[in-house]
Image (tube, rainbow, N blue to C red; front, side):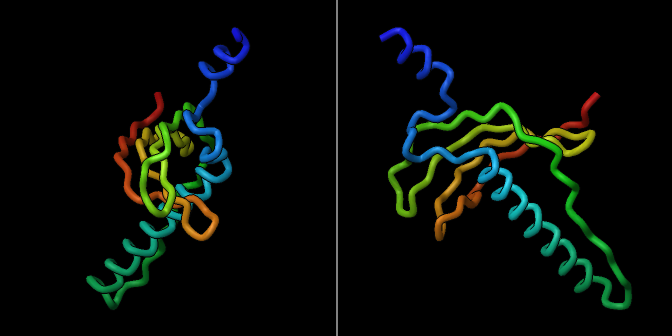
Length: 118
């Protein structure tokens, strides 16, 4: 019984059936970053049509502190997770609702705080 209690205490997800891996979370974050880049680039091109612009996402260097809640009763299946995304000298602390869409995890909505690393 004690090993089960210890395993439950160190598990990152309350629901083992619906638990995104680090790679799946990073893919969802990268997809969201790409959407932000495309949106910023389109807005700039619209505001300044005579200029050439280069917008790119900052490379993700890691993921840590992942902790997810119970599955939310919704369709598509979703779960809320807290995690830290590492971007070079910055850290993004996020609480996100992840949805399973077409076999992939996607960030439906999130609260994010970005801090420079000291």
